[in-house]
Length: 375
Ligand code: PAD
Ligand code: ZN
Ligand code: ZN
Image (cartoon, rainbow, N blue to C red; front, side):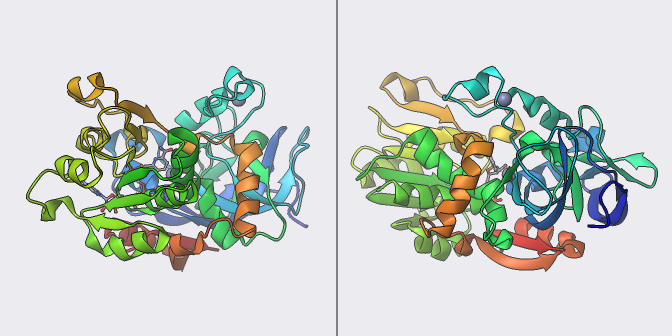
């Protein structure tokens, strides 16, 4: 390739201030330094978390920033000391790194690697970034910033995948699919024959349903205030769909009556604080497990009546589905290739990177589950 060792000029979708539309800008992407990788992004898109952050006032401290953290691409070049990927490899972007050395990485119980500190600053290269635009340093969302033709990220934030993998499908494993599927199979550990209720039927909630079904759940109740999501929920495995606003009783009571005391497993995937108590209250009083998925990014306080716990319900949270990313995302890609689950139903629209603002509107209007953005 003729670009190695040189600055690459290319396009990216840049957020200059919260609430503003994304600007399609020409950026400069410097070559990767030690332990860094420069990647040509082939497929990316928006997750609900991007959409929330872009409209949050406090996010201005990270602007200008390239949004996006679900992405897949091809390695263009690598810096010194990089050993796990090389030029030409197909890769998936990891929005939680796996350094393999910190206490969390060395313990099987959790996936939040200590190196996530870079993600919180939205800088991919040890307090800086290899990307500039109009003379300004550009941040990279969650230390990734996939809404760009090229990006430079840490080697610990990228994993080599099956070289035959269709990137325009498997990019969604990078966050939405892995988050939902893992919340069901890793965090809740859904059991065969059990009953589940999923609140929120975006890309993440639908992936929870796929996980519940794969784990052998007998009943999967899909809950959303947008009925347009119900057909899709049924197609991925929901056995019953309900809009709480159509009920005369609170949804908790409805589910307790319907599921003989409540669901064995409930999932909050809407991102609303109030829905956490609702989902917990919809669990079986003795043993029900409620997993918070949607709220994790917003650092909100939750108010929950202690009575909900006293009888035995359990409340847990799940970040990126609990996966050890560098090790396990390539396996998820291989599982997709082996047809163990179907991602195609999650990808409802296709646009180009230059049409990123249209993709934002599609997400906000509730019409789209995931829109893949191609170069
Ligand atoms: P999305 O906006 O596509 O889906 C949210 C869904 O919730 C929509 O279908 C809404 O109609 C529905 N909804 C909203 N309010 C209610 C309500 N009161 N009752 C029932 N349904 C409702 O987003 P997404 O699927 O991409 O992401 C969902 C959440 O998960 C979002 O909050 C995002 O920030 C979070 C997330 N968490 C992680 C993690 O690691 N925990 C990863 C990725 C996304
Ligand atoms: Zn680590
Ligand atoms: Zn996400």
